[in-house]
Length: 196
Image 1 (cartoon, helix red, strand yellow):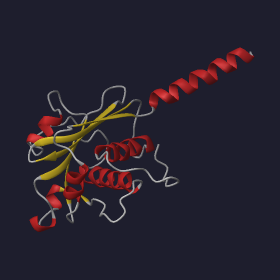
Image 2: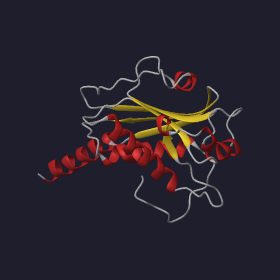
Image 3: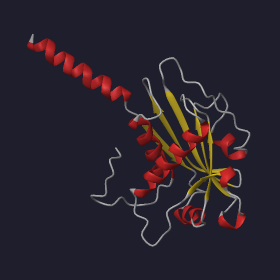
Image 4: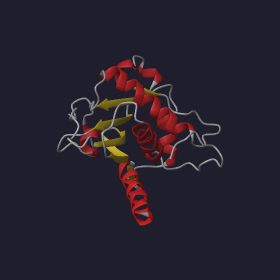
């Protein structure tokens, strides 16, 4: 019986690990630089596009939730003497003087076939993303940092299992993807808001 209990504990641990998100990132070394990232974030607003909605919630509420997750992702990193980016959904940016229009971040949830980082940077307004989840509830997310239609850096996240809009694993994935999109800061020791 003891061996059965140990086996069940091990299986539960494996199941929990399988449900965690996985995030990886890629930068274009000839185009991306910390100075460019700082410059892009230096205006009042940082143009942001969100495509796709795999949840049973309005697009507006999903957009707000994602912007908060992105903001939280940047709170954990050291930006002393520098302004943290204010991610703003594109339709809300009305004054071009308050943004650097040649830079933007785009996020696609469960992107359709062919919607890769290059497509998101080429035309984020017309990039189509699927709004349906797979039967398993799997969510795939692709985020890109763009300059004038070119990819500077990109992060990719995946999450398995039945996922609701308030699932903390999803929020942590988006926050982590945002932080990894700008790979130039050193993390502060002891500065932890619960992100993995």
